[in-house]
Image (cartoon, rainbow, N blue to C red; front, side, top):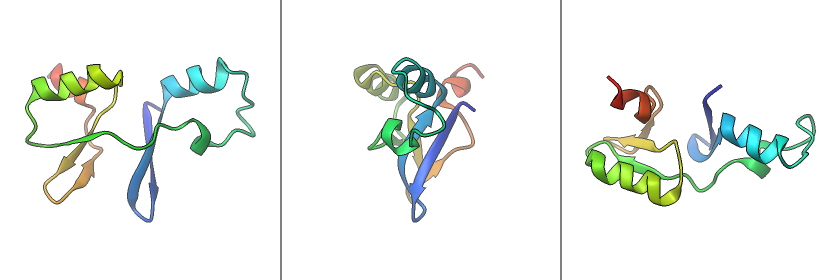
Length: 90
């Protein structure tokens, strides 16, 4: 799964990751069949512009203790085609 970005009227409002499934659902004895993604997703989203310097992006991820950071491209659309960590290894 990796990550799922949740939207409301095409506007990104939250993110749900594998890690959240393990930490927030499994570790807290929540019933996966009856728990709502809205209750365990991270919101609001943290995003940066596509021209943001890599050092600044990494600093933001460390400061917020997050592993996924959305990238807004040009007009503000979210780029879901690449994972930032995967891009760093290319």
